[in-house]
Length: 96
Image (cartoon, rainbow, N blue to C red; front, side, top):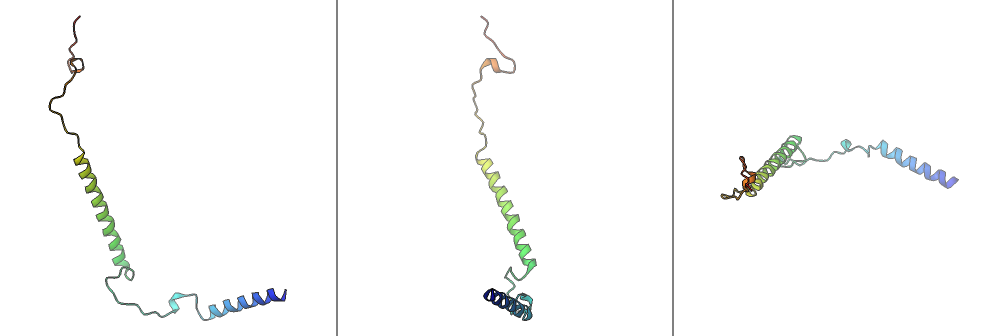
């Protein structure tokens, strides 16, 4: 029982110490930011522009590839198709 109370006391003491010294909050840690205008992680504007362009050109390339695929596999008309005379617009039947 005493050992369990000591573990709870030490855990509570550690938690209070961490809260007192602001160890849980990132805004209290003064980390220097590297000034790199090409980094998409530091600027939300360039990040959203990057994602928009990736999506736009990805969709554009996908559409062009689909059109090209339809063009290469399109129906090629046969010039002389043999059609049964009974299936013409004006059918011709054999008279027996």
